[in-house]
Length: 115
Image (cartoon, rainbow, N blue to C red; front, side, top):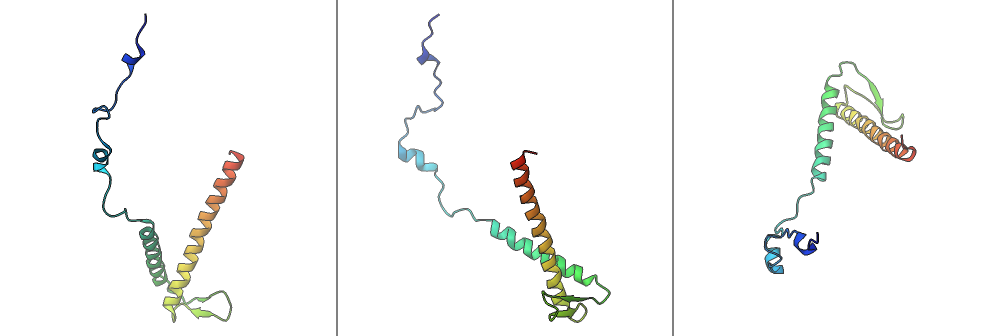
C-alpha cells in the first residue's frame, strides 16, 4: 500500500497561517508589567517576625539581662522592652537563616553524592 505522506500531515492552525503579523500581535500583552511580589513577601516576613518577637517578649515575666555583641551593651528586659524585642528578632532571623543555609548545603551535598 502506497499512502501519500502529504495526506497524513495534520494542519493545527485553523486559519492555515493566513493571518498577517499585525493580526497575530493583536493579543500581545499591553499595559503595566507584572508587580514583583518578592519585595512584598520579604516585607511581610520581616513584619510578621517582628510582631512575633514583640509578642514573645511580652510573655516574659522574669527579668533577664541580654547583651548585643559586646559585654558593654547589656540591658535588662523589663527596663528596655523594645531592645529586648529587637534582640529576640535578631535571634529569630539567625535561626531562620541558619536553617536555610543548612538546607542549601545539604541539598548541594545530596546532589553531588546522589543520595
